[in-house]
Image (cartoon, rainbow over all chains, first blue to last red; front, side):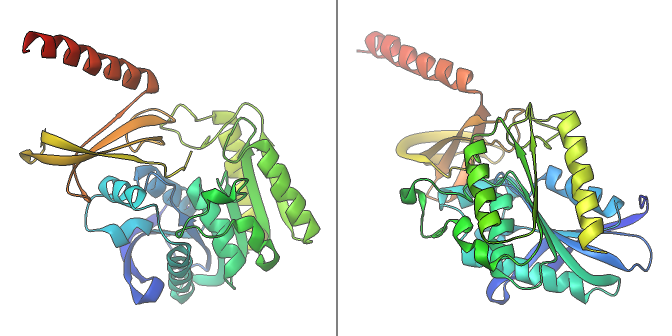
Length: 248
Length: 84
């Protein structure tokens, strides 16, 4: 079932340390109740594809919100703020988690909410999804799309902004996890996905991984050469099914 | 690659962007996911005024970047000879 009517707009949420954070919010028309999804944008920023992904999930019956992680480097256009964020070494993990907590609270406070909230993130947002799902209570289903640096092979890669490898937080993961990965990806590599899967198994976590041949990093990105239509279509179906199972 | 690896270098010069000409004092160079170019990874150069104000941004393929480097070096070599 799809929801062709929707409302999409910019809203303000209360993020980390009470900061006001701009967010793009789309939900199906009608009273609901609708499950919520927090969507974490990829490293290039809060771009048009991010908005399209939010609307795509709204079309499937989810109230979806994506906040601008780089707002703290503003004001400015999303691409300029992405450049500033990169130059500064990225967003601090604590800030990421605080903003996600605020986005979840926003969704649950809406009159059409069914009380359930999932997360999804792409690229660095996949890492953020694993991170926040492992640190926060109240995430009902988490989707990590090719999150890089969840597994950190070289400890010198840890920084003040990203002081831990999220895999080391796996014990805290309470939500079921869906992971989508391309077998031609280098970050995460298939070996790193193996490592993550072994950790999830060892910790007794509920997870579902799908690994796609013929796909690398960011194979949902329809505007980039990395796009793989068959794998992306199947991946999106996996996301919808996972959320319908865990967020109903 | 989501690497955050950025090469930064001080420069002296000017650049023209949407707001006209201005001084640029640094260049931030990285190879990662672009914002606009239809590439999975792009060599990006942000020409900066101060540490945080981006005046001009370019994203190009690795092949283009290498060709640009060669062109810059060739232009410097021939131009400096001409003006020596």
